[in-house]
Image 1 (spheres, rainbow, N blue to C red):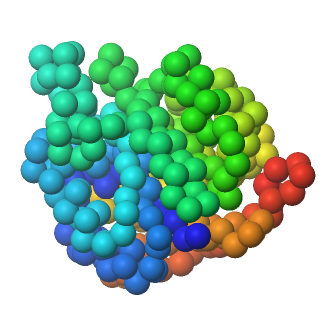
Image 2: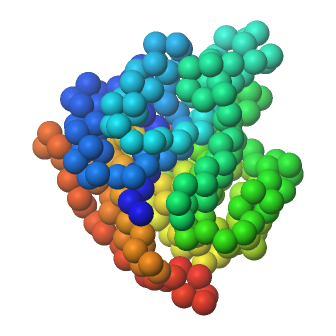
Length: 255
Ligand SMILES: [Fe+2]
Ligand SMILES: [Fe+2]
């Protein structure tokens, strides 16, 4: 099973050369599915969502997405009354998809809230859904959300999603293998309660942070081995820069 983690595309602030490079690299890496953890757009405009969907469709593989804080409109009536209206119409009617595909069991959560501009929330109902939706056996259980559940070394002062602790507890209890998040625009991965937590950088926008270039992450599962390879934009193409090999043990995932 070969998955792509892509996040924070930010159409409206995209770098056209990086968009083309990302499309080419996703095709070249021959991934089975593309998992997108939000911030498809800068301002939740229709043309920005369409450009993001065009890119994902062009890869020619199934893709699954959750919204980020930038995918909620800024203008007040829509933000207050129908914050995910454009996302539902143009990307996916379900902002919290549950995917079972072969050995993959994936739940996406929508953590962006209209009253929390940058922060996000995993509420009690979402914590309960982690427990119910991700119960049962699977080769790889993945939880995906936009806001971070851990702090990267590059940006140690960034806020975690509200409810991170409860979400992590529920995920660990139900045997989640991998948690995917974005929002901080840097690439990082850590072990959290025996799970592999992965954050990728902005995939194709100029909103790079902490001196890092754009990035996405390949996740390769082979039995009880998970290889995670960060692919950074460097001199006109995405290139592998750092691979981590995780092993599934009775104590969870270990490097
Ligand atoms: Fe972002
Ligand atoms: Fe964000």
